[in-house]
Length: 609
Image (cartoon, rainbow, N blue to C red):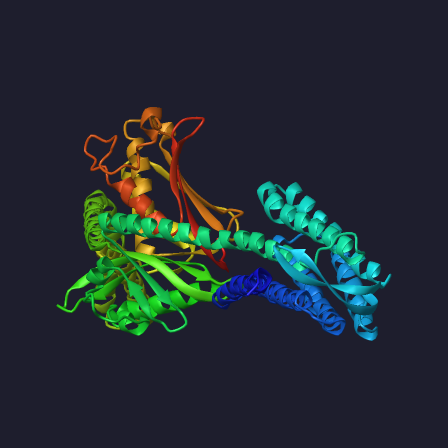
């Protein structure tokens, strides 16, 4: 067996092996179509090697011409493959050059099969033996066909296309890739073109060995394609290291990580997450099984929030309760993100969960404590309103007594005036209702309850509080003025809580006037609509104002400027206003005194002042 009959089948086998490897990789990553084109290049190179072997081992002119004719088929396929690979893999090159090269070679192939014996020769009369690689190979004896120059011009166009690709890749900053892939292809095309021209026109006694040059191109491009696999292996190692670090960090933070695969609703979870949710390490998990662990009151809201996050491809953050196998309840804080494929279709949800039971219990305890302090504050405030309550109730009770005495006098007459008695009884009923309303307002302020939000008329709210404080204001010799500007929209809030805020602010304002001159003993309450869908209520006094160094701290719990104050009134008021979606702040007036302002969101309905 000669060296040639060993080497050329090896060239074909090497090309097919490299191409098959890339084809198998493509089956795992279908988006990389350049690997399919690479397989076609290897298939064409193998075909060229076999037809070249047929020419070198031919014993007659007819055998040589047959092998040479069919050699043009894999050559054209290689043109397609090289052009396609450069366009897909390097994403560079002028398309018109690629089309021109393939077009010339396609026309040459058609001419090749229309002529006899082929486009290379007009006539082949026999073969002659020449020495090649220490072996004897066959060369054709005959008359070359000038049309072969047309076919060989396609190599020059392909060379121009390869140079254009190399320059483009170089200019966009990928210099190493330009030299490795583009430069190597240019070299092999130039070498192959020179050898083909010299061999065809009989200038050198060398057989057709184009498959060797194309195998060189395959080796170079294989190296460039393998960069992705090498990078993947590197990333795999980095990912493993990153996962270990992430697992360690999650365990240190008492956090469990999980992945929900949307295609089948299966869930992968770390051991820490399984411990949080009460699952054993060997338990299989799916979405419905996890949802079954949630508290029934939280289950539907969590499911709806997750579905919305998947639909919009966004984030999901929530806190919910778990029902543990032992009957206990655990609060969980969950944070997740939806991940999608390149077409924007949701693939999975990746997230982390942690136990927040201690925080939630502390928040609930703080809320209960705040409610207790609020209640104590209201009760304490009633002491200050005792004189106002006595004054307000004393008037209707006195009127009732006088009307009852008058009715008794009328009843002593032999013919009492029944119409007059009816009018007296109507007055008694009205005075009784008036006294009842005063008492009911005081009772409602003393009740402990959560927010009962509903549309309220701001003017009525202010008027009710003002009527409660008229007696106290009169006893203190304070002028309480109320000014409501324009037709105000209703506010959305809890009547009793908002009354408490106004009571706090107005009583604080009157306290600030104690000891002041008679002319400045005035408290003003105003209300007006803002441009941002809010109502602003302000309570102003003409007292000494708030020291600048204490202005920023007046809303801090247990901070007070009063000798007998608790320091909770303003803090509670601020909490109430914030819970209604508003803001409470304080400022000193330019002409003396201080103003406390707070805003409340409107509910959109316009009412009369």
